[in-house]
Amino acid sequence: MAIYRVTARFKADMAEDLRGKLDDGSIAAQQPDGQEMVDAFGRATVTESGDVRWSETCYCPTPLAHERATVLDRFFEDLTTEPIATDQRYEGRPFLEYLGDLLETSSDRRA
Image (cartoon, rainbow, N blue to C red; front, top):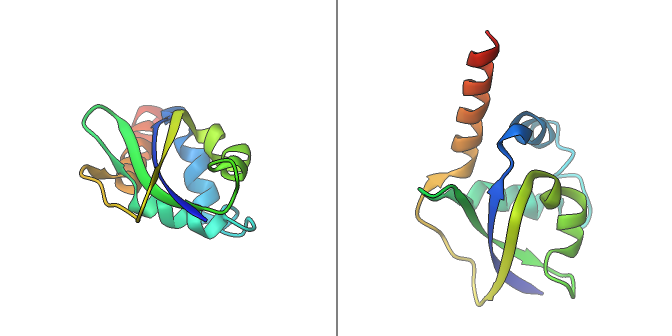
Protein backbone atom coordinates (compact mmCIF):
# COMPACT_ATOMS: atom_id res chain seq x y z
CA MET A 1 0.00 0.00 0.00
CA ALA A 2 1.16 3.52 -0.79
CA ILE A 3 -0.36 6.98 -0.54
CA TYR A 4 0.16 9.44 -3.35
CA ARG A 5 -0.28 13.14 -3.89
CA VAL A 6 -1.99 13.40 -7.26
CA THR A 7 -1.94 16.53 -9.39
CA ALA A 8 -3.81 16.70 -12.69
CA ARG A 9 -5.81 18.90 -15.03
CA PHE A 10 -9.50 18.08 -15.33
CA LYS A 11 -10.91 17.78 -18.84
CA ALA A 12 -13.77 20.26 -18.38
CA ASP A 13 -15.69 18.89 -21.37
CA MET A 14 -16.00 15.60 -19.43
CA ALA A 15 -17.84 17.16 -16.45
CA GLU A 16 -21.26 15.73 -17.31
CA ASP A 17 -19.88 12.23 -17.87
CA LEU A 18 -17.91 12.21 -14.60
CA ARG A 19 -20.85 13.56 -12.58
CA GLY A 20 -23.08 10.89 -14.10
CA LYS A 21 -20.66 8.10 -13.18
CA LEU A 22 -20.35 9.45 -9.65
CA ASP A 23 -24.12 9.76 -9.28
CA ASP A 24 -25.01 6.34 -10.70
CA GLY A 25 -22.48 4.58 -8.48
CA SER A 26 -20.53 2.99 -11.31
CA ILE A 27 -17.19 4.37 -10.12
CA ALA A 28 -17.86 3.46 -6.49
CA ALA A 29 -18.80 -0.09 -7.53
CA GLN A 30 -15.53 -0.64 -9.38
CA GLN A 31 -13.34 -3.15 -7.59
CA PRO A 32 -10.97 -2.88 -5.85
CA ASP A 33 -10.49 0.89 -5.93
CA GLY A 34 -13.79 2.56 -6.83
CA GLN A 35 -14.82 3.81 -3.41
CA GLU A 36 -11.31 5.14 -2.76
CA MET A 37 -11.52 7.14 -6.01
CA VAL A 38 -14.92 8.56 -5.04
CA ASP A 39 -13.56 9.47 -1.59
CA ALA A 40 -10.46 11.02 -3.18
CA PHE A 41 -12.61 13.19 -5.46
CA GLY A 42 -14.41 14.35 -2.32
CA ARG A 43 -11.07 15.41 -0.81
CA ALA A 44 -9.75 16.96 -4.04
CA THR A 45 -9.33 20.68 -4.45
CA VAL A 46 -8.79 22.96 -7.44
CA THR A 47 -5.99 25.52 -7.26
CA GLU A 48 -6.20 29.02 -8.72
CA SER A 49 -4.11 27.80 -11.67
CA GLY A 50 -6.69 25.07 -12.37
CA ASP A 51 -4.73 22.07 -11.09
CA VAL A 52 -6.72 19.46 -9.21
CA ARG A 53 -4.93 17.94 -6.20
CA TRP A 54 -5.81 15.07 -3.93
CA SER A 55 -4.33 12.24 -1.86
CA GLU A 56 -5.15 8.68 -2.80
CA THR A 57 -4.27 5.27 -1.39
CA CYS A 58 -3.18 2.67 -3.93
CA TYR A 59 -2.35 -1.01 -3.65
CA CYS A 60 -0.82 -1.37 -7.15
CA PRO A 61 2.94 -1.76 -7.67
CA THR A 62 2.67 0.98 -10.33
CA PRO A 63 1.13 4.18 -8.87
CA LEU A 64 -2.60 4.30 -9.64
CA ALA A 65 -2.24 1.95 -12.62
CA HIS A 66 -5.74 0.47 -12.39
CA GLU A 67 -7.32 3.80 -11.46
CA ARG A 68 -5.71 5.49 -14.45
CA ALA A 69 -6.68 2.72 -16.87
CA THR A 70 -10.32 2.68 -15.77
CA VAL A 71 -11.18 6.26 -14.77
CA LEU A 72 -8.48 8.87 -14.23
CA ASP A 73 -6.96 9.07 -17.72
CA ARG A 74 -10.44 9.49 -19.20
CA PHE A 75 -11.22 12.56 -17.11
CA PHE A 76 -7.81 14.08 -16.35
CA GLU A 77 -4.64 14.95 -18.21
CA ASP A 78 -1.10 15.81 -17.14
CA LEU A 79 -1.55 13.51 -14.14
CA THR A 80 1.44 13.15 -11.83
CA THR A 81 1.87 11.19 -8.62
CA GLU A 82 4.26 11.66 -5.72
CA PRO A 83 4.57 9.24 -2.78
CA ILE A 84 3.63 10.79 0.57
CA ALA A 85 3.58 9.40 4.11
CA THR A 86 -0.03 10.19 5.03
CA ASP A 87 -3.21 11.61 3.48
CA GLN A 88 -2.95 15.35 3.04
CA ARG A 89 -5.51 18.11 2.61
CA TYR A 90 -4.86 20.81 0.05
CA GLU A 91 -5.84 24.45 -0.14
CA GLY A 92 -8.25 25.39 -2.88
CA ARG A 93 -11.80 25.11 -4.04
CA PRO A 94 -13.51 21.74 -3.48
CA PHE A 95 -13.35 19.76 -6.72
CA LEU A 96 -16.94 18.53 -6.51
CA GLU A 97 -18.15 22.14 -6.14
CA TYR A 98 -16.06 23.09 -9.17
CA LEU A 99 -17.54 20.15 -11.09
CA GLY A 100 -21.06 21.34 -10.23
CA ASP A 101 -20.29 24.86 -11.42
CA LEU A 102 -18.94 23.50 -14.72
CA LEU A 103 -22.21 21.65 -15.24
CA GLU A 104 -24.27 24.70 -14.36
CA THR A 105 -22.29 26.89 -16.77
CA SER A 106 -22.60 24.27 -19.51
CA SER A 107 -26.35 24.03 -18.90
CA ASP A 108 -26.71 27.82 -19.05
CA ARG A 109 -24.97 27.90 -22.43
CA ARG A 110 -27.36 25.27 -23.85
CA ALA A 111 -30.46 27.13 -22.64
